[in-house]
Each structure stands twice: as structure tokens, then as C-alpha cells.
Length: 96
Image (cartoon, rainbow, N blue to C red; front, side, top):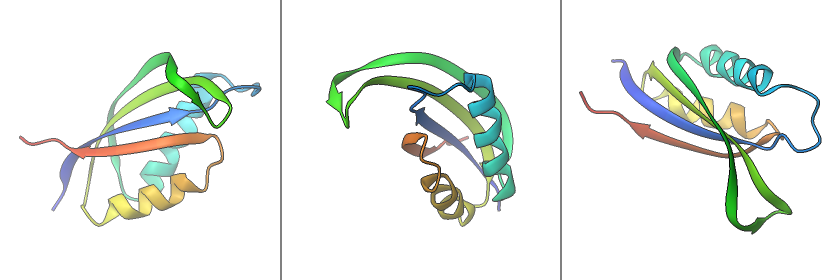
């Protein structure tokens, strides 16, 4: 049974030549390869961290809305954990 989810992905683009759109597309393809059906994707822009974490002062935030089976979330997390450019990932089920 497919459910709706929201994912907040924080991407470290410091020193990278790729555009945020290229990061966004690559992450979306990784999510789809694990069984997610992407809906809306929002690039929220660069945000500054409250404190210097892992020698980063800020990163790009991308919000993904998608549908997937609950069992696919672990696969998506594992696949994106292998991507060194992803600083943080957070998932939340959307009711309704």
C-alpha cells in the first residue's frame, strides 16, 4: 500500500561545480530507483546553519513530495546515505 511522504534533503554543494538542479535530479532518480513516485520537488535555497557543523556554515535544502511503500523508505535512506554530497536526510509521512 502506497503512502505519501515528504523528504527534506540537505545537500553540501560547497566546492562543487554541479548546479542545484543537477543535484536535485540525481537525488530524484535515486529515490525513484528504490520505488518512489515523485510528485512536487521544491528547491528551498541555501540556509545558514546555527553553528558550524562538520566545517560547513550552510547548505542547500531540497524538499521532495512522493508516494512509496513504507518498506521502500529504508531502501531510499540507505541509497542516499552512500551519496557523499548529502549532509542530512529527514522523512515524514503525510496524512491524508
